[in-house]
Image (tube, rainbow over all chains, first blue to last red; front, side, top):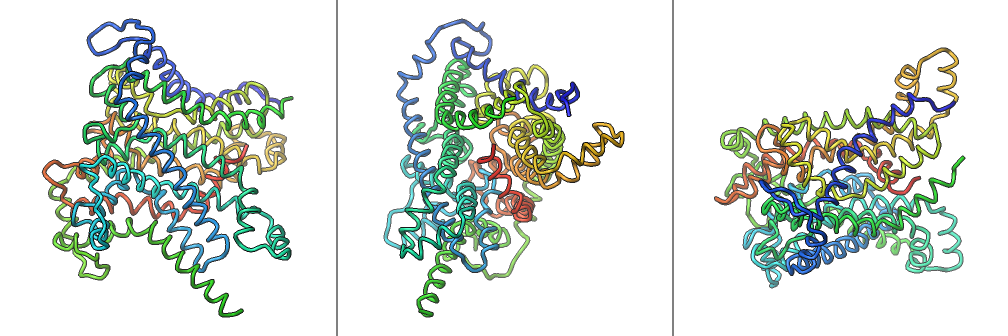
Length: 289
Length: 277
């Protein structure tokens, strides 16, 4: 079948949505990042000034550091947990179907509701978790006043919300390993730990890489969980880059600074995804006619 | 040997229960607490057997009557975004599956790249532009925004699904004189139903639960359920947990039931979207 103009018309809606709503505004933000812009004043070109502003602003670096800590803690915490659950389930557990449903359940939960649950469990003195911490003779999590504790809660609830993704990717990858590989290893006298380290992990490594990349990209833009829980406070100490952008764009109406932050986030994201892009590029353009 | 295996199963079951508690306990706690009396909500340890009451639902209806309208907004926006996504991506997925040339491959690669961009960036220029067009706080705006952020994944899933359908089916229809539209709706679409369901799970769960765009682009008319729940949660006069749990339960139950029912498609879609070409 030869491609004709109606076929191009069929991809037009999807492509135009992406161009009009994502590509064009993103490019415009790139231009805006080199301008001073606010309500009621003419936009004027200022060169690299907005970028100079953010790289010399300690609050930007605080937001960067928070994002860096949260992203790494969340991504590797999820990987450890998701992989552990995947290995456990793949080894055969009773009630597997029900258990998988329960593990996937947080995927259905809104970030707003995720925050609600953890906030309820961590209410000072009365929340179940804080009560249990006191009961065990430990310190309570004082997330409303202590920024470190605030970040800990954000990390915990993000891991809780996104483990289903890492679990599904690693679990499917493990199930795809031919069972003869495990059987052969058993015959050769390998124990479970050796099988995990020498067979499971190396074979599913490509899937682990992709799961990590996707989670890095998505965790890096974290906004809702932080905003609903702490609004970035106390005194911007729990801010992430997306919250910093929001504060400059929608509170101070300094669109140039917000845009520079946006493009800094964009470039970091593209850098994280570069390896994946290269991989996809090679696979896709190889079929070239 | 037998006892050893029995212990192994016991340990596995224990670990599995811990996993289930970690994932399920927070959700269960909210659903159950919505039927408790206010005085019992912070009881420790939390009780799972008690006389249920609908008091919290009554209070929710009395003090936050607008919640039900916002829940309806969520429903309208979710259905709209899902339908829009499915229509445009079934068409695109078909073309990407059946044809290949440099232009198509380039545009497919463009979709992969654009899927990575952080959504918050576009809020900066969109806010004044939409304000000018009078589109702020409308249902159609959220429908289009939500759909746009899922057309890439959805096209991918549809393409992967249509790849499995033999071309001979369509060719036979064309030989019999069917038009492109007829072939697509009567031959390809029914066979691609799995893909349609897989694509639907993602955009549906996202639209029902999204916070950022709803927070920035709505104020009253098109406000969604997650947004009003976040306002109840952030109340300066202190959180009234009873009605909040009632609202949370009404928001969670439909999507939870749907996602669990669609579990098979969720798993298939996640793996296809992340790892397949």
